[in-house]
Image (tube, rainbow, N blue to C red; front, top):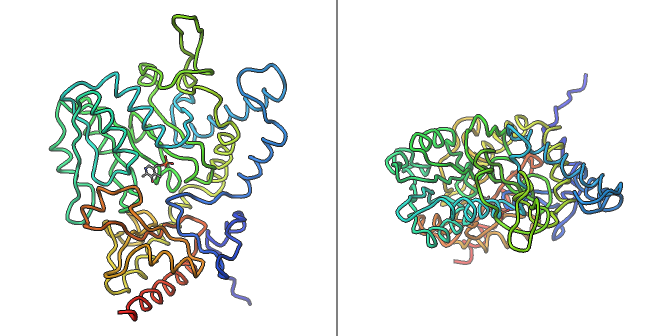
Amino acid sequence: MTLIQSKTLGDRVRGDFPILHQEVNDNPLIYFDSAASSQKPQAVLDVLQHYYQWDNANVHRGAHTLSGRATDAYEGARDKVAQFINAASRDEIIYTRNASEAINLVAYSWGLANLNPGDEIILSVMEHHSNIVPWQIIAQKTGAILKYVELTSTEEFDFEQYKSFLSDKTRLVSIVHVSNTLGVINPVEAITQEAHKHGAKVLIDACQSVPHMRIDVQAMDCDWLVASGHKMCATTGIGFLYGKKDILLAMPPFMGGGEMIDEVFLDHSTYGDLPHKFEAGTPAIGEAIALGAAVDYLNSIGMDNIHAYEEELTAYLFKKLETIPNLRIYGAKPTSGGKGRAALAAFNVEGIHASDLATLLDHDGIAIRSGHHCTQPLHRIFNASGSARASLYFYNTREEIDTFITALKNTIDFFQSLN
Ligand SMILES: *Cc1c(COP(=O)(O)O)cnc(C)c1O
């Protein structure tokens, strides 16, 4: 009898990602930078290629066959995204270039129309710059005030402080679901519930959760949610804003142009229905269609399977990293089984610059990120100008973690031998 070792999810899907099968600096590529951008499966690349090769035409305008095909595929992808996050209606999905644009859309449209001097916006210190800078701009324009929820001693979202910030002045709470630096998973349902008690709106930055776990916007009850395609197996140039229909209906347009109008006169215009009111100009048609293909691909694997496998990887990554002396990982530790945390670790090793670590690991074909990961205020709290970050996705394996840990230890030994 032969013993058949069951393959892990990572082993099973790796063949779907052509880019992973190459050597970088004479070593097999190990891609641990998916929190910055994920790789794309062949199924998504094929859909993109097919669109540009056979169906390419502008959407919504033409009577001809190609325009009809492009429109059907573009709008079909919207249905897929809506179902993926359990939106109540396809009209609640607005395509944007990325999550940053989606946040800016809410800031400029809703923010400028609804915020007044003294109104309060609650953010947290772990927000990505994309969820800080647009609100600073809007606060400067409206006189609204920003309040930042800090970290607990275990480096998590301080829920008690958050509750103490809420008042009838609070108009908006805009919080990251999963931190791209701390890896912590914030209690977004409870955050939303508390905000709604005070009549405040809630925006969830789901860039690091939509690719990795099942999302249900109706259960979450958030008013808006944003994500980027390129972190969820789709291409760059496409992301989306989810918004509750009644709220989107009441919001003025963000940008003006073709596609978003009903009728245009020389002195005024009327606007199109949702979702087109917020999609000015020719959109990223092929990229939206590819986003739909990415959703199909993720569904074919199953978000619960992805999440469970990433928890295993998280537990393994932490077990290994914790054996390295003088290595400091930011953010609360995972609980048993790698739960409660994303499959990423931002860390620093005493006396070694993060960018030096990343550069030497690249010589071994290992791609990790170094820098501030667009969370400068958070790094300032840790008195660090930056950190190294290994971020995993479901196509990574334990064997890759082993290779990474060995290379990391060798790199650290090398730098320490220089002293
Ligand atoms: C990547 C990221 C963003 C910004 O996404 P873009 O695609 O650059 O717009 C915002 N928030 C978090 C948590 C992210 O990880």
